Length: 370
Image (cartoon, rainbow, N blue to C red; front, top):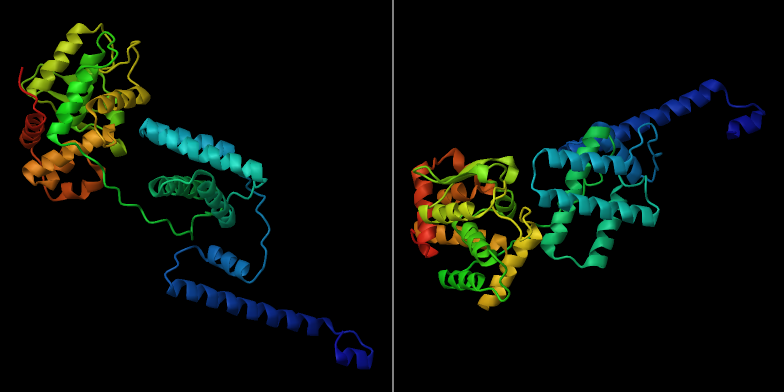
């Protein structure tokens, strides 16, 4: 009760209370308007309500949790994984999303934070715990951050929930210097593959041809594993193979030099009918773990100190081709490199140039016509 009311023994009139509330409302609107202006001047393009909500939180006003549109994170996770798979992304990408989201979900359950997954503080706490627990390399941490950010960006757009990554600054993408093999080192790798310590029937021939195909074509691991005989043209004047689903879902036609086409044709004639070009010893399609084992055995047998993977051989193809031609656009086209796609807008690469590129790499790899 005001001092005047106490002195007169009267309660404040409704008009006086309404006037005070009206002044407070106007002052609040002025503050919110200034917050919006400052945000726009700073380049903030969020919705007005998102800016107002953030301003209220800065002032210590705790907003109630939204309960009108509850989001089941497990269902959202399943839907997102299905969307990624249906977009024909590489299986390794699907696996990476599944591992990242499952780890985040487990942490939320263990910490009792289910229902608070859309808060920035929750995501920051998880990422700190992930770092402490796993000690990931910079590239691994960057990948985990970006995978979760893409998922929440989609979830926010779909369900209207807050995006906890909206104001989080992404870690700097680490520069990776990939190893590559010299022609001499690759020759040692091929010889080691042809003379395995424990030779099962057909293993030496398969392993050698896997390594040759990777370095001569520059195929990605998933592209080699997914290769079917129906995608390979070995009889035409210009042998080639079709990569049905390259990075970003882009198909491309990859030229094959005659010597490699001849070796693949011989392997096809020896093998019983099967859709997959490269297979495990039990007859099924070659798996990523088996491919890694092929490369690891050959690398150890060759006495190479470098860490050699399927990507190392792809990078070897790019290095040899760039060194021989000095043509970045040709390297980009030959490898189906999504990161250099802007080059294609200005420079056309003729198919004859790609055939010549394949011949260049084959010559460096000492692959002669049969």
